[in-house]
Amino acid sequence: MFLLFIALHAVIAYGLVWLADTISAVPFDRSLDAHWTEKARMLWPVRIANSANVLVVPLLLHALHWHLAPSSILAWPLYDLAAFVGAWYAGYPLARKVYPSVDHNAWLLAAWPSLITILLSSGLPVFAGLAMPPAISPLFWLLTLSYLGLHIANLYGSVRWLLRRTGQLHPASMRLQQLIDKAIKEQNVPIPRCWELETLDAQAYALPITKELMFTRPLLASCTDAELSSIVQHELAHLNEPCFAKATRLIASLVYAPLVFITPLMAWLGFSGFILAIALFYLLHHLRAMVGQRMEVRADAHAVTNQSVDGTYARALLIIHRHNLIPAVMGGSNRTHPHLYDRMQAAGIHPEFERPTAAASFSTPGRIYSIALGILFAIAWISSTR
Image 1 (cartoon, rainbow, N blue to C red):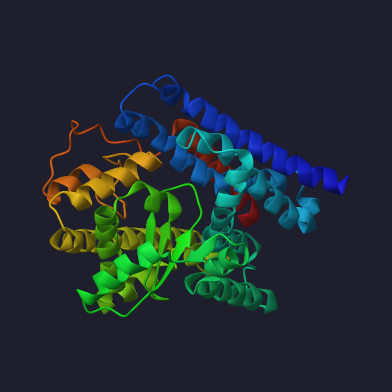
Image 2 (image 1 turned 90 degrees about the horizontal axis):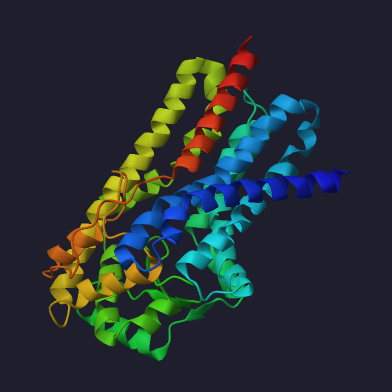
């Protein structure tokens, strides 16, 4: 019976996320012949809500458990983990909309690192917050040290280590390494370690703490040497960010820390502790977006200055957004990257399409789930204070 309940949590979580995605994606499904910018605009709020629901839906089931079956508290961690995996697995049908040719096994191989990343960066902090006792105790220190230890491991490449062990991360090919070596000679940066990642999206990453660069193989296959070289210049600029920016990024990486300590804060300060935790969360989230966007503008300028031919970097950005169905104009203010449309214009190229309407930042079913979660936790908090 216990195993059945674990499986049931995974199935229910999968069903809730799948239902929200299916309803929200109806406009996208009806516009398959539209321009890629319009398709990206329609699908983006679904994708953002899907990412959030990987945590929101397990938390929703957790809150329902607290109300309906509080006696099963010892089994909650396993139920929560099963719901988390089920909610994450519901991302496969959505991935097929972005990458129609991907099959199930290829998606699993490419997507499992995202499961680990979400679990380390946001999942464990949130669920540690649920388990955190209201007073300082051995459990308090165990959860605190576990959170900090896993956070540091994540910053210093734990996911990269796993990718190497599973054969998805490879040293840079001769083509990529030659482009990087050429770019390094043109600027004063340490020689970084460079990797190629087997995944679905076309993307490049700079890891300033470990001084590494990571390029996905779809990006390498989609870009010419000149386009790829401009992206290399952009990523190298991130490795050479000012110390203030690096320190700010490091502080902002603790964005989920206030949620870890929300229970003791509420025990010490009452409702003011809740307000303080949420305010700190949003402050760090805004700080991360603000610094990230400024550093993206700086890296873009560096890439444009060092491109071989005018328009090369703008074309590379266009390739990335079109391959990954990332909107040309985003909604919301807490973005780490400027709009593609503005970045192309800043690079000296006027896009060959009209400026699209900004993509919505969240889907309606996703908002409903989040509101329901907030109501359940509010009821739980009111009940605990009586």
